[in-house]
Structures are given as structure tokens and as C-alpha cells.
Length: 124
Image 1: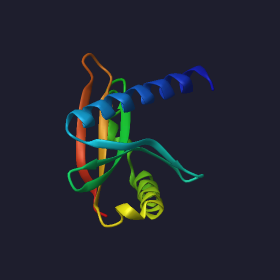
Image 2: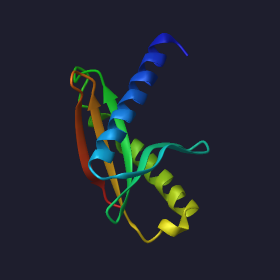
Image 3: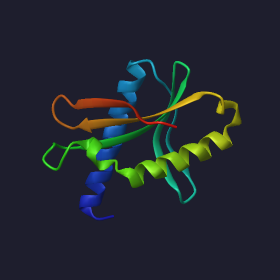
Image 4: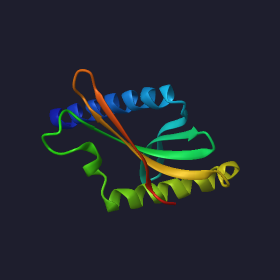
């Protein structure tokens, strides 16, 4: 992995840890982080909140110079997350009747970090 990719990977992992703590502080119960299904990809965080199963994409940026983190989640990325969520639910049938929601947590790594939580960005 080249230096730039390594830095971006480290930045992303740091943002995911900040997002996880933020969510837990808000009452979310994180079930799994970085859930991967075969070649289809990965969901950053899967959590329970009240009576909902929440699939969360985390996007981290050093600044907003290249746009807000939420802008990095396009229709293609949402389609991938939806397919992964369907796989997760099919592999966990005990969760099949829980309401589902899709969120994005945008993290901007400044001091202190700025965290924006966009709830229910996609209807399932």
C-alpha cells in the first residue's frame, strides 16, 4: 500500500472509531463494525437503536476543501449498502422483523472533530 493510501486508510479507521463512540454515547448498541460479506463489500457499522436496525456508512475527511463527507455517498454506494444490508438480514433471520434504517456519519478531522449524523437517508 502506498503512503497516500495508507494515510487515507488510517484516517478512515480513526473516523470510524470517532463515529462509533459518538453513536454509543447517543444510545446506539453497535452489533458489528466493518461487517464484510464476500466480494460485495463492507458496512462500516451495524447497530441497534431503540427498535431499529441501523446500517451506517462513515465518511471521514480532513477538511471540507473537497466537499462534505456525505457527498461521497452516491447512488452506486447506496445500492451496494442496500445489497449488503439484505445479505446481513438474510444471515440473521432473528432480525428480519425489526425496522431498518440507513444513516451516514460524516467526520471532519479538525480539533475538535466535527461529527454530523444524517439519519434515515434511504427508505428500505
